[in-house]
Image 1: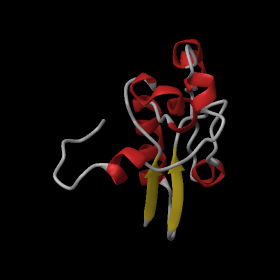
Image 2 (image 1 turned 30 degrees about the vertical axis):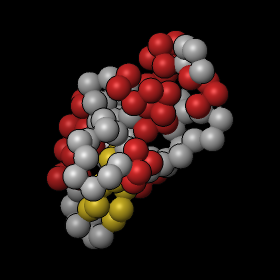
Image 3 (image 1 turned 60 degrees about the vertical axis):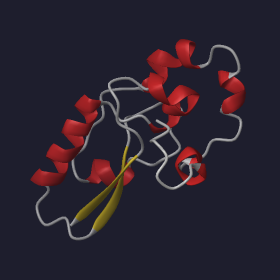
Image 4 (image 1 turned 180 degrees about the horizontal axis):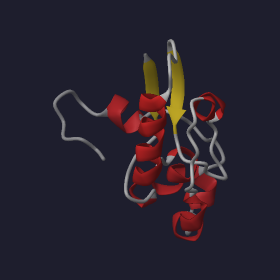
Length: 112
């Protein structure tokens, strides 16, 4: 059994803002990741990160690469768009998790 913790999977990291430079999993890399998981012979129980090989990523790809995953994408090509304005300041304290999901009242519309 393989548990995949997907950072964020969108066509581009733009909907995520600057945080997308850390957590983005391109759809193509997502397909490569799940193909590697399905093709792995007897993987046992593993927990892996589902992210692309982003220059600024904060999650390790070691476990996924051990299964044969090879990322071909990097969110850095979107950096100029994501770091405009106060984008660089938003990356001073990178985090995982979704505070928007934790602070929304129960039953409120999805903030993303």
